[in-house]
Image (cartoon, rainbow, N blue to C red; front, side, top):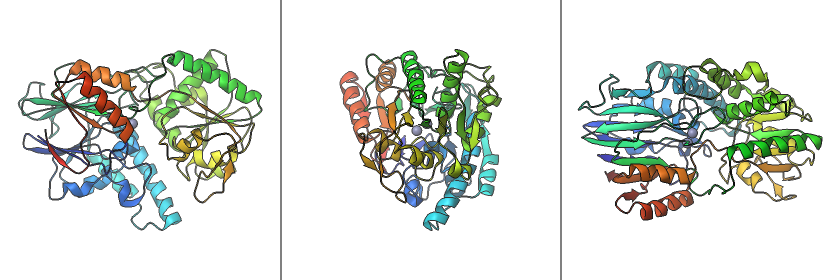
Length: 456
Ligand SMILES: [Zn+2]
Ligand SMILES: [Zn+2]
């Protein structure tokens, strides 16, 4: 079995991994880098040159896993593309939105490479996707077969991260490889914890997003929710609004569900604003509420919470109204996104608040702001001005990713012959490597060097 890490660096980056096994060639995930533009935003697809793929398997529809799929499909017209039904529904919405974002970026920066694909390209690509059910075995040509088939097969497992998210089990050459994708082993407000295989796995390929963040010993989700509602109350008492930068997929719906619980418990009731993309994805959550494993299956987010919807035009006139929550994407407050534009109106006003509820790259505007000291000067957009941080900033731990402790526990339970550590920044990956090297002395722990072919 041959393996090449197609990310450009050891980082969270643009996920994509090449595998050659059982006479087949396939790629797991085809992400877009959240921080870079142009070629740098793509996985290292040149490493595939001259190789014809049989299959592309997508773990879930976050931008860093599906964002460049239309580009890869154009280069690999013969490859079959597999994902869950929910991932397909969300992926198409997300990629259409990405066309709009890239078109705007081209206008602003003159980047002639952009957009990397157009709306018609997304529609054409989406027509070719094959939706696969969880816990069913498929061949790489998309046929359902028994799990003990001699062919090279794959099977999706619920990853508990966002709607449609999966881990992927490959069976080939009498061996098994399991890719966790992005996973959560704990329940969230909507998503239920992952249901991963407990069978013998030879090679485990594991995400490391939270590898450098220990969970405080006193942390509990219920306790964190309580602190969150108390902080909202205090923020409103200060006479300001609360901005919560969130990913359009996953974190928006989790925050809406949490706010619904506060309303139901009559703790707090207030108007909520979300972005257009978040609203479209929430619609998909609502449509599919009763279809899979989740909590609060009867909750219809848009009907119950009736959020006001802001978009790329209306955000420019949106007021910072006191007593309101603005749960806007992007989660990293990338320049020109709703959360970034709105944050510039909030950041130097002492009565307003920004609550961080999930992961943000430390170099992203959200990362910079969450680490800023009071009164420090920050620039949230290179085209904007320096601003003094006067608003109230708070952080909450509602990650959609597994804690490093639960990842280690999972790896120890499976005790695979090899562990490949991916999807983490260098410090995170190194912590995981060192810990697993001690805890699993009989396993080979590998951090795959980007672009280097490995024999597994
Ligand atoms: Zn994800
Ligand atoms: Zn990810």
